[in-house]
Length: 321
Length: 318
Ligand SMILES: [Zn+2]
Image (cartoon, rainbow over all chains, first blue to last red):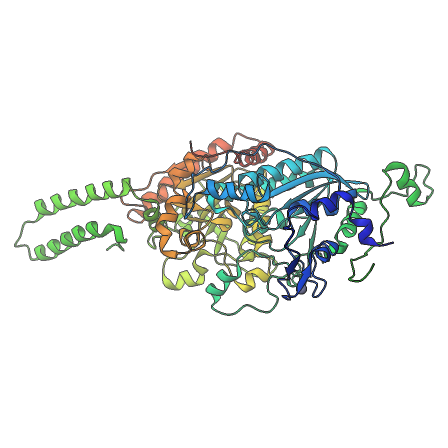
């Protein structure tokens, strides 16, 4: 059985397929190795370069579709706060920047969240869209993360957050900084409810997002090669006046320095998440009232909707058709 | 002798003349009392008019003034029996974050502050107030200590921001800041934070997620420095003055935005002119705020703090 054929369900196909990509844009240049990737291969390998393994940035909608069973989820909604609280203007007004980001993405802001099932388990996933003003955090993101966290608490669901952000949304000034506080409380509510809070750090996760909810997970998973850190590399270079060490602030560097639990390729992400969440939400799935052991699969079938079969650890391997 | 800021040039000239006159008259041949009195009145008037309408960029410069009282000045003046505590118990002691126990108006408290240092040697030793992960981890340790013994926490915020360096990143600067904010929201004791100078971004809020956040009249508190904002959004570091205005970083702006709870008036011409007066004004405000918080039980203190920050999502200028 092919993992990808199994994986790419109609809903996901619609999302990652003929949607927003231009029909004449059939080839993509890999930012990692500069080789050309055919658009079908891009979809097939979940936007991981088949030549060099580079994990390309992907939008929040694709993230959600990739992780939920059948790619199906219920979108979580919330009141989007009054935009442009400072009436900010740099070389362009914030209002105009916001408008064009909304037109470009079709979303209200950088965070999208959904509730659904992952291998039958209740999960809320909130993901950031780097394409929306660099995934920057303002009042709307604070509101979204809070709504998603509270949905997880209501549904007794695991909370998975997938940041991809350059940091605070400067155009909201001090109010964007306050979202570091607000989102910290939001994820704390999930943890206080005894539910798993899992962060999947993707490229890039820096600034105010990394220095708040993105670094407070029960489990930290990072995608290969993702840049994760507090300060931007240019700022650090200017401060220390040296070139930065090889691999600095990459996922593997954070693993080595004890900041993440594991670096997981995109193709294995869903299975890894499902396995971890299962262990945390169902600590004793085989235990029956009479204390006798029972086949775990059988019991799972009784208490949960039928789980989608999967090969643990299966990754999309180029040519694995 | 003052260190003058650029916009204080007219004041500097007048005060220079007064000095000159005093020097000339020291041989006792001239009676200069009248003249000096007149000029001093002029200086005072100039100080009032200048400091009444400081621009956001000018306030940024005042907030960063080297002669401004720094965290240790407040601690030395306001805290009796101050007992510094050192180290994060994991890696190192970070002199950019000072802290310890002491008595404020007789009551045991835990005080934590960003220290910038007051001369070149001290500034280097305190890393210009830019903390590394161990500084934030030490702050977490002290907040937890306060929580364990039910001692109020006072933080004094004055930092350009968290230190951007290779070692700081390697040791988890982002996690250290995030965890500090989390600890701020976990403790069940009265918690008052005062921005005494520069509230620089994540490095500041790591110590300032408090029940009551107070700012000095000419302090600033911002998501990014005006210089950083200018170079990113305007791609021109020279636009810092414009960025300072756009960021709405003054105490008055933050009060309008509902982000802070009170402003402490500074002496005429800024805290750096009358340091002890400025320090005592802050002491009075902390005393008042702690007295109000003392009435609340621990759980209420914690939940009120969380509710307060959760509400900061629909703010904005009319
Ligand atoms: Zn490649």
